[in-house]
Length: 60
Image (cartoon, rainbow, N blue to C red; front, side):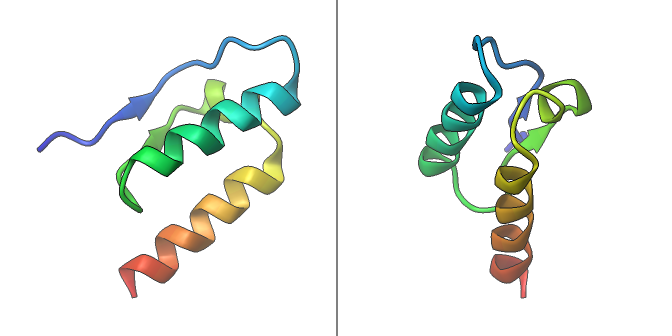
């Protein structure tokens, strides 16, 4: 199965973009989403850090 890639988030604020990403993570299994650097720059860094920690914990 191909791994989904998030290339962009269209939202008026970083907060809303972060909420979109958080909701998307709820429907995908841990470690199943790659976030493009452009999309990563549009969300709050804390959200990305939480996702990385969850993926690392799931892989261990």
